Image (cartoon, rainbow, N blue to C red; front, side, top):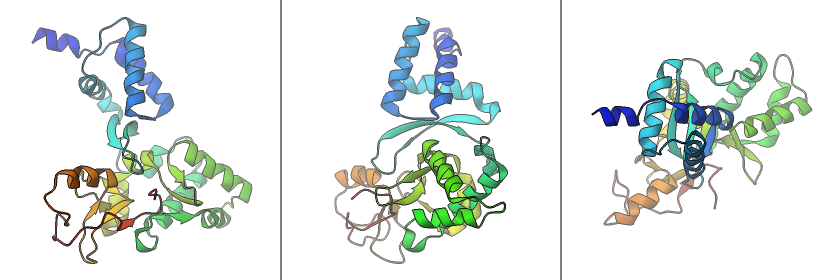
Length: 248
């Protein structure tokens, strides 16, 4: 029992890892594990189980309304690790480096993305630029372009090769409660992992609510006895997708 407590004690490993993650915000899990190995080398301390290590950090920072969360990149299924704000009442909590007008712009842009037609969950770059002209005070085209670039750089938005903006992984991790509260039934959940989903595969039956991340579908149909919808048993086509950010 004592040995277990000693292994999970909060020490220089956790402190240095957390400080590094504060600068990255979000990392592929393999890069996060490499960062952990370097931290242990620098602090000359033994490695423990990575999941246990992350749990020990989360236990320490819980009262600060932040947490390290594990998820997957919707586009390619790559496991990711992110430091997120856990406050659920205000979208402004995620954007302390933005002005009130910039946060207002972000709110309206998210609404355009969530309310887009046919579950595209995307907005054309031109529409995003035009939205800046509607803000009070007005955002010039240059200011809007620079703001959009910052949202992409900070991990809130993703610009696809076809020139549309979607929510990136950081936004989906931090804004899940906000999205559910603001957009209700418009928000879809992956049938397998129960996280908010804005791109993936869907059932061919129009009234069926089945939506599955592509990487979750890979795992499920690899062992499923037949290619049918897990909910309604309609034949499942892996090519029946939604979300403009999903690669071909």
